[in-house]
Length: 137
Image (cartoon, rainbow, N blue to C red; front, side):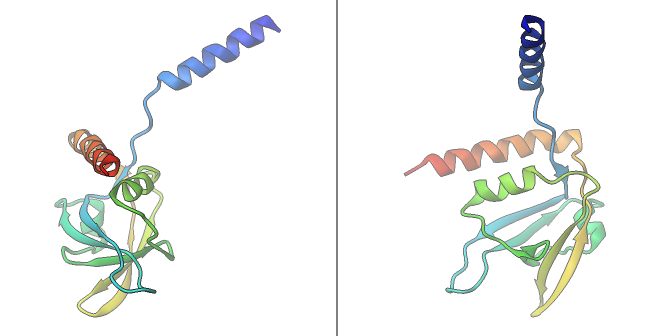
C-alpha cells in the first residue's frame, strides 16, 4: 500500500511539473466585442491573419465578424474568457466559424495546427495581459 501511495505521489508530481499543452494555432488576431443590443450575439472582429496560416487558408478574411463557433453563440465575458476557450482547441480538430462578411453569413471551417514556436511567447503574453485586465476594478 505504501509503495502504491509513493507511486501515485510521484505521478502527481510529474503531472504537475509538466507544462500545459500548447493550444492549437489558427493564425488569427481578433478583438472581442460584447453585443450592443439585447438578443444579439457577442462577436469577434478579425484584425489580422498570419500569411499562410490555417485561418487564411480556410478563407477567413480581415474584417470578418465571427458570431458563433461550432454552432454556439459566443458567450465569452471578456478577453480572458475568449483566450480560455481557445486554449482548449487542439491541432487537427476543426472549428466551424459563423462569419458575417459584407452583410451575408457563411460558415468557415478552420483546422488548427500545432502552435509554432515563434507564436507561443505572444500567446503567453496575451494571457498575462488578459489576466491583468480582468483583475482591475
